[in-house]
Image (cartoon, rainbow, N blue to C red; front, side):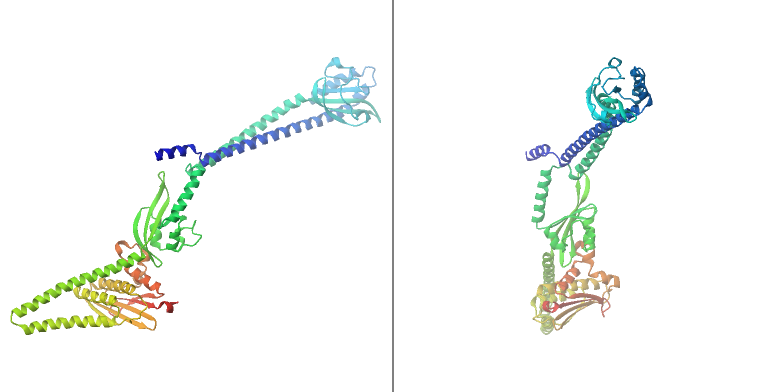
Amino acid sequence: MDTAAGTRVRRRETSVARQVLLLQVLVVLLLVVVSLALATYDARRDARDSAVERVVGVAQAVADSPAVVDALDDAEPSAAIQPYAEQVRVDTGTDFVVVMGLDRTRFSHPTASLVGERFVGDLGDAPGGGVFTQEYAGTLGPSMRSVVPVHDGDRVVALVSVGITISSIDRALRDDLVLIGVSAALVLGAGLLGAWLVSRRLRRQTHGLGEREMTRMYEYYSAVLHAVREGLLLLDSEGRVQLVNDEARRLLDLPGDVVGRRLDDLGLAPALVAAALGRTPHPDDLYLAGDRMLLVSSSPAAWEGREVGSVVTLRDHTELRTVTGELDVVRGLTESLRSQTHEAANRLHTVVSLIEMGRPEEAVDFATEELQVAQLLADRVVGAVGDPVVSALLLGKTSEAVERGIELGITGRIPEDAAVSSRELVTVLGNLLDNAFDAVTGSDTRRVEVSLETDGDLLRVVVGDSGPGLDEEEAAHALERGWSTKASGGRGVGLALVAQVARRYGGRVRVDGSPLGGARFTVELPRPEAAT
């Protein structure tokens, strides 16, 4: 029901592209009509002006003709003037050439029966020697006419009137209007074609939506985008940021002018950028961005089968990852205690068997020796580390080292007033020891040394191993692995978390060679006030 209603509303609303098309068509039509009217008016005015100039010119030419002046002295001036005037009329394309006396008597006229009649119309100042023009309705109908004087010396002896009827002017104007109409039709066609092309492109860009639909979509999408607790990035097909919400700005420390910029120009982790720009979905992969561990998902976005970009979601898993690391440590301790319980049971059976065999002295020596070894180990670890949580971690790691055939040495101590929290010390030591244990697993000599040093306000944690070590390139990328490559299956995340803790305290992590032959990681953690 809702879908059908929404479809009906969609159909009733005119799309923006169609509205723009109609507006453009109206504008083009209005411009063409106005232009056509102005061109017609201008052509009509030019035609009349041209007609006036022509009749004045013809009239002056006839008035200056010696044949006309000579014929005026004849007893019948019309006998010579009528054929001459008709010949001029035909040759010049005018409608009448009338030569008259000062008393208005016609000596010539296109209608022969009107010769000798009085001229109809105004003469203006022509009898006084001026040139007079007017539009007047005479015997041939409305016309544009001129009246000029005929001079014989200094005297005005006759008048010449030449005219072109308005109907003749309009017939000539129609030829010009046809050309104007054809030009207007071509302009109208070009304008309509351009409007249609613009509308077609706009329809593709707006997907045929109406203005209210686009307004609602923008308002609702913008509200949802900024209300969700996950970070959201919308990228176009060229990898430019088109939309970003507040959470994404916070998680990635994005600048204010991020919209419109390419994602790979923002200084983000290369692996994160590669995942965001990927053409295949990447569900829930861990990446390191600054001090945050982000769970990133990206998926291509498509519209009507055409790919338009990608959508990237970001979730902050920093705290969760830290807690998960602590949980892994607890699980390791649990496994270590379970192994110790099994080992203690074996030792207890050995003691019982020695007693049953009648060798109580050997049983006491065996039990006392094991107890002393365990107590010495516990005393040494607890004495070196005042924090019970870190002590428990190191005891568990010591037991794990024994089970894996690794010689673990612990020197130095952590002061009770250390500024680093127990949880972060567990993160640093646990991940460094796990990394060292993995490094020496395949070596003939399996040895790991932990050094805990204090230098004023600086706490230094050093873990070295006898493994194969790292070359210069590997050492340079060891801490960047979580930054630059995908942390698939949790690999590369541990050292990234160590570096994260160091940055949080304003410290640093150095990777170099160990005197044992393998790699050595040095973590320096100053007090917060000392770092500032």
